[in-house]
Image 1: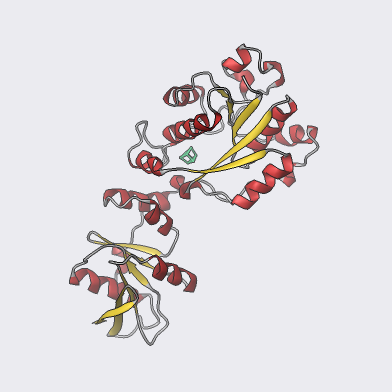
Image 2: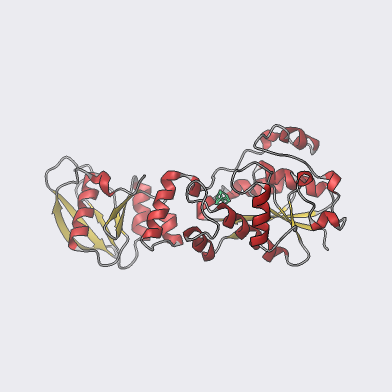
Length: 327
Ligand code: SF4
């Protein structure tokens, strides 16, 4: 077996500690950082951290199969739409693909740190799903866990590994200090898992229910206010930058709407062939968020492929809230 460790690397303190510990034991550590619109970290920060601690970093985007897992996780969701058990197994499978037969697989997980995916029974379940039973090294809690095959074969000295447990991070500064680092040098890279946030989860659920879950629509969840009008989705920009994004992302068959003559948001209707009624409702919502919201009648232009195709006159929506995708 090679002395190469493929470590799931978020750039957070736990993965940093795990990497330093494994390096100290003489292993070459390759940090594997998975990117995904649902749990995006600041990539520059992650790269900086990897560089600082002297490990190679591989950045791997998750693929379409991750969406299937969010849609229908075989082992269920956590509190919101976070499919933690299947998500962790997915990550380990990715690591396995990269590590091959001889690489050692490791994570910076700490026993008892998270309720759903960092319990002993969850570790076992996740390893079983990923077909990596006893092949996932968790150096921060290893002494509290059954030995991995790496420890059994003497590739790794169990005595040199740690016995961290729970959510407390009070040991971390001390351990980091041993490696000559200060905990302040490692701020947590911004960006957590959006699937754990109730207000975000409800928007993803809406996409799932309307069979619209794809990466393009997921990325658009970060832009604008979201409304559901029948089977159509309307996204209304909240500022100039978002308006530009919505215009740019509009597909060939999709409509954009805005109020001429007044400062106005751009609305993007993300469906083909919306009914007249839907377009009228969308226009009244866009008018409501424009500076013409107090007018009785407002002209709204409708564009397809950047070309003006219709002009409507509508009353700005007074009860738009009921169309909003929210909790
Ligand atoms: S919190 Fe999000 S990223 Fe973390 S395991 Fe759960 S689903 Fe995956």
